[in-house]
Image 1 (cartoon, rainbow, N blue to C red):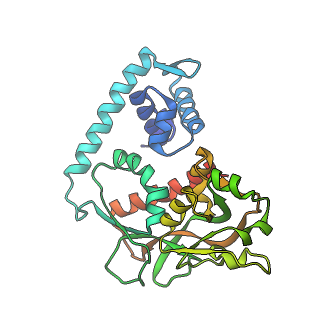
Image 2 (image 1 turned 30 degrees about the horizontal axis):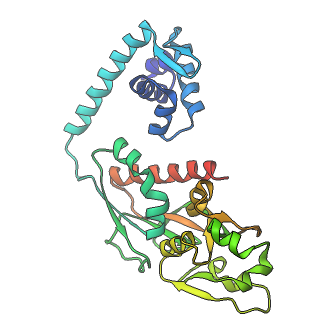
Image 3 (image 1 turned 90 degrees about the vertical axis):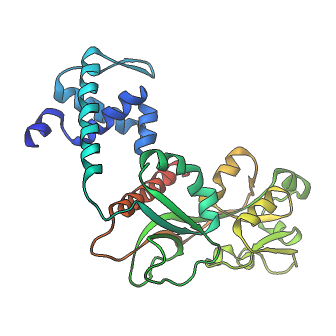
Amino acid sequence: MSDLRKTVGTLDNLVAFEAAARHGNFSRAARELLVAQPAVSRRIQQLEQALGTDLFERQGTRIRLTAAGQQFQNAVATAFRSIEHAAKALPREDDGVVSLRVNVAAASLWLMPALGAFYARFPDIRLHLVCIDELPEFSNNDFDLEIRFGTGSWPNVESYPLLEERVYPVASRDFVAAHAIQGPNCLSRVPLLQLENYTSPLMDWNTWLEAGGSPIIRRLTTYAMVLEAARFGHGVALGWHPYVHQAVEKGDLVKLPIDERTSSYREFLVAKSAPRRRFSVEQTKDWIIELARLSGQDTR
């Protein structure tokens, strides 16, 4: 192994090369590996420096394997297939089933769009997605992983921070135009969409309203319904940034001219404390944490 490191650098360089060669594109390789595109380019450069030869011809954003690169790809692909077959042949207790309990908003607005990449990367993991709106109290055997909103201080579990809480009012473009909302003083005269059960005080309209006025409060039981009602122009919703930023970018919702607020609350990935965790659960945990890291970079 020491000789291999001297020859190719880190094993991450080989992983990046294999993905880039297979896709014929650094950006697609980066998406598969859940890293930024410059990280793939950097690893390829390190590998080329270690080998003392160019592996790709670069023409702008287009790449093509050199003769040396094609020869090396054949060897790397054969080695990776051999490792994969040997790994699958090993006896194991892990059946590949991972149960992930998550609220509907996190599942539909954040996790679901990214699951295609997860399935492509981990074809042997069978993700059992349990979507519920009100997460029950913890018990010992009813889930492997869970996405839970709060402060992260739960007993007998390990908590990994995912998405920070940033909240701001949003509404449909037509609703904003019809009601001429210019600032927080306008909120008391328009319908407000209120999530019935919430944890963070920032999701309570009472903390946003100025004294006086009696707005119409329209209560809904799920956050997905709150946002859907806002899209249809039924009122103003409190937008949780990780879940609404794409709708704002597409123009389905408009961020009102009111300062956003933050808190110490956030979405956490929760895993049962255990001396040893199944490999499929560990892989899923690491992938979700990395997805959150990249989401944070994309939405700032």
